[in-house]
Every structure is written in structure tokens, then in C-alpha cells.
Image (cartoon, rainbow, N blue to C red; front, side):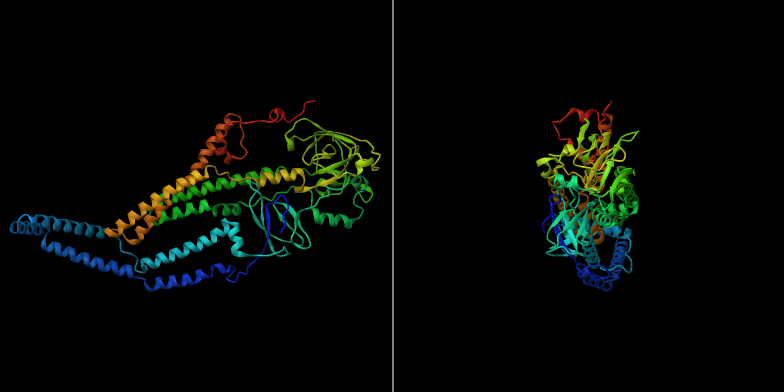
Length: 563
């Protein structure tokens, strides 16, 4: 499928059937494995308890034998044998004494060991069940963490986009995350932007706004002439609104804690719970939950700040059905002819991207370009050869174009020879080009919303360090397992648990919280120096910066004009 330049790729997909109570066929092998594991656990239930009882009986027999013979008598007998057999008996007596000491130590340790549960299955059966459960959980989690894996598992590739199917949209780097979206009748929505699909279903384009017409076409336009045209335009372009829906705290928190790092942290805390470190484990879980809550609150606060960029609901004069009428700015449609006039108090925000057809105005474009110098805008000239030119709102005809979100500082009415419609409120007569999230202000809002991405620096160095630590952890866990099996002082459950704890300690669960504390400390230091950081996770990358270059001083000093 041919994708537009604003996205990296678009892949058509079709959802696989989910016959297993809403789950896909990828979980069918786990049903068989669960059946085998549960049957094994049921068949071996009580074996560890029976072995512990047998061990307890052997221990009691050993203790009774020691009490009847006495440890001192055994040593005396060894000394008598030494005298009879010469110096060679000394080593044998020492060996016997060491064996007796080891037996006594093991017996005392066994006396303190608790008996297992009478229903506990065999160790290998429980281990097999745990491995099946962990792999089942990983299959579920990986589909949430990786969209490519989810697309491979839950969807099948198609050759064209059809209504009711899905599309995997991959954005460019640092422009948000990939997403699987549902295809509607001839279009789909991605990152609050509408993409149109051609009749063949193999070509995707951005929603085509009237920005590539000839100049004389705009001058000859007289607005919408019927209700049918307006309804059709509304269905295609939508409203002129920058409304951002704020998700609930519950949904955002669940999405946050199901991420890779929080999942790993909760897994490590559960291991400490199994090892009966209740206070430490519960404190870790509480700290992780509070940290994730603070992250969620920060995200919702940023969403509310973006929502504050929503256009104020103001009244505006629009020319429809050969007459001027008053509507709200959110009801503007591409192709509308409207009048933009300076108010008595305060600046007027331009509601959409527009082409000036009659009149002149002065605008402040600091919110979009950072340039505080006021810009003069004048009506288009469609006389002669200029009327056949194609509109170029970014370069050639920028002087005739108003951009959404900029401030109107002054407007002058003037009757254009090529445009007969006059303004009813002494304002500039303009042609609406782009609205909503397709406008200049809408693109800025989308860039801010979807470019919030953590920047990972020194990824190679971090990976090398973790690999080195993992090697040492594998050696340490292997040594612990070998010695534990030889000494038989701990149960197999305890040995496996300790080995897993050693492996998980390679990445400390508190590492994300420690990183957040370091970043916050850097933020406070920057605030003391009157430096405001909009993307805190770029601080680690900024630590490598040696030179900072600025293109113009006006952007750094002020964005206001004092008259």
C-alpha cells in the first residue's frame, strides 16, 4: 500500500478469529500444556510431604542411635583403634569424627525445617506448571509491548484496505508510536488525523484540503450554496475543533503498570514475597505503585495543558447561500468565505488557515515560528498571469496566507477588484483553507502530543553492562544451585527461588525510580538557573552537549510588540 509522506508505512490487516472465549489460537498449545501440568501435579500431590516424613523418621532413628551410643564413646573407640593400628588410624578417626559432626549438623538443621504442605506436588511438576504460566503470560504481555508481534499473531496480512479491516500505521521516528486502526468506509483515523483511501484500496493520502487550487479559483468562489454541500463538507472535514479527550485515571494507570518495566518490578517483588520477605516486598510494591501514579498524574496534566490550547468559542461572520450569517468558529468548513475583523479589546486569534481575498492585516506569528516581528498580510492578486498560479501557502504566497493560532493585531478593509463580496464588519474577507487538526495550529498540537518519547542514550554501553552483569549472575546462580544440591540443606523450591532472585538482581527494580530522582534533581537545578525543560527525558542527552547555537535573538528575548 502506498503511504503518504507524513507516515512511514501502512499495512492492511485482517483480524484472525478468536474461538477460545475471545482469545486467539495462539493460546491453544497452552491448554494442552496446562492439562499435562495439572495432571502431573495431581498425580504427585503429597510426595514431598511423604518424603519429609520419611526423612523425619530417619532423623529420629539417627538421634536415637546417637543417644544410645554417645558421641564421646565413638571418639574413644576411634582413639583405641588408632593405638592398635598405628598412625594410619589417626586419619580414619578424624574422618569418622567429621562425618559424625556433619550428620549432627544436618540433623539439627532438619529439625528446624518446616514440613511441606500435605497437598504439595512434586517439585518438577510445580516447576513445569510455573514455566508454562510464565510463557503464557509472556505471550500475552509481548503482544501488548510490541505492535509488530501483535500484528503477526492476531492479524493476517492483506493486499488492500477494505472497510471493516485494519491498518498497521508506522510513523516516522520521534513522531509517536505505531498503531493498529480500524478502516472505515474509504478512510481511517490516525493521531487525530484523517487519511483517505482510494477506490482500489492500495493508495492512502492525507485528507485533501483545498490548498492546491489556482488563485483565480479562490477569487471566483462564493461560498457554500446549499445545505447539502455543507453537510457533505462537514462529513468529510469534520468540525474546526482541537478537542482532546482526556482518558480516565483508571485506564491510564492500568496501561502504565502493564508496561515492561513495571511488570518486571512487580515480578521481582512477588519473588521476595515467595521468600517470605513481606516487609521489603510490600514496601517495594507500594513504592512502585506510588511512582507509577505520579507518572500517570504527569501525563494527565500534560493532556490538560494541551487541551487548554483549544480555540475559544467566538462568533464569526461567514458567507453562505449568498448572504452573511453568524456562526461559531468551530463550525467553519474548508471552502467557507468569512470575515476576520479586529476586536475593540485584545488580540483576535485566527481560527483556521485562510487565504486573504480582500483587505490587509497585521498578524503576530510568534506562537508558530517564534519570530516576534509582526507580519503584514495582503490580498491575493489574480490579475493577469498570476491568476493561473497554483497556491503555495508555505513559500510563494505566504504573504497572502493567515495561519491558525496566530494573533490578528490590525485589519483594514479594502474592496478588491477581483472579489466583489464586501465584509459586513469592516474586516478582511478570507477563504478557509484548513481546519481542525489539519491546520497549522492543529499540526503543532499533534506534534506536542505524539512526540513525547523517552530518549535512550548510551544504549550500547548500558546493554554491554547488563550483559556483563548477567554473566556474573549466571555464574553465581549456578554455583548456588550446585552447592545447594550437594549439601541438601535447602529444599529444591528454595534453591530455584534464590537462583531466580540472583538473576533478576542484574536489573534492580528500583532503577527507574532512581533515574526519575536523578532527572528531577537536574530539573530543579535548571529551574534555579531560569531554564525550563519541556522534555525531561532529554536531560541525559543534553549532558553531552558542548556547543549551543541560536539562530536569532528576537526569539530568546520577547514575543510581544510594544506600540
